[in-house]
Every structure is written in C-alpha cells, then in structure tokens.
Image (tube, rainbow, N blue to C red; front, side):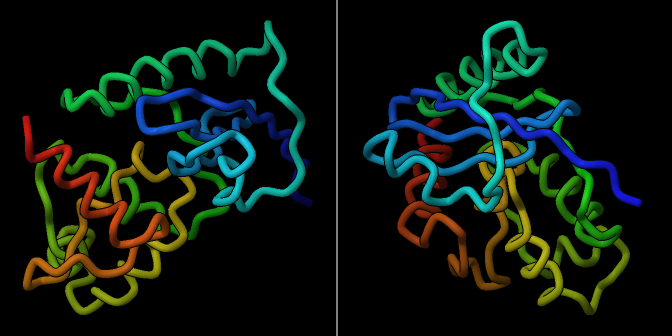
Length: 173
C-alpha cells in the first residue's frame, strides 16, 4: 500500500518571473518554469492536489534556500542547487538518469547518448529522452543541458526557446 504524499506549493520570485515550487515532506517534488505572472506559474505543474505552503513548515527553509539559489542562477552565476529532491515514483532507470543529469556542471552540455552510456545503457538514448520528459524538477535537475549528439536543442518541457535561453545564460559566465 502506498502512503499518501502531502504536497505543498509556493511561488518563488525570480528575475525571469515567478516559479511554482511543490514540496513534499522529503524535499522538492516539482518545479515549474519562470512565467510572466503567478497565475501562469502553475501551468507546468503536473501535481494537482496540494496545499499552500504555510510559514513554519519544514519546506519553508528549503524554499528560502531554493529562492536564493534561483536568484543567483538567473543572475548568471553558476549556482549549485542543494535543496533535497524527492525522487519517489521515478523508475530506477529514470532515477539514475536524473541523478546523473543533476550532476552535469553549469555551462556544460552532454548528449543523450553520453548520458545513456554513463548510466550503463549505451543503446538507450531515446529512453534517456523519456527520462528527461519525466523530470519534475527542471533547473534543479538541469535537463536543458542534455542535447542531441550533433548539439541540436531537441525537446524540452519549457520549450526549445527556453532551453536556448538557459544555455545562453550559462554560457555568459
């Protein structure tokens, strides 16, 4: 029997616009993309059932930390994200791909094929793309840093233009 997961959300203000964050009691459950306003901030969020994050909740400290990290990131500094991530409900393959992706250094890109090889499944480049699609915490798990083997910017939940903008931001270090 699966224990119910309590989810809590809040909005984090960034230089690129508001970002919706959804937290569990374990860590970051889901993160949206910067959007023009708070109403649109939840557009990318897949979780449908959550309460608003109340002051005093453990996740408030994580939210403050993430807000600081995102502020640095969107100012063009090589921020490293250290908030805990809730890895539950990913498959073993997805978890291995996403944990590898979380360690890709700022300003660096790797190919889907290279990720597949790194996680011990050299013929699974397409499956790596599927794992990227399942990523609930973009930016913190920087799937925008994974590109086609020829350097092409393929598929991204925030759109290819957002992927391009994030890579451009990281290249202007």
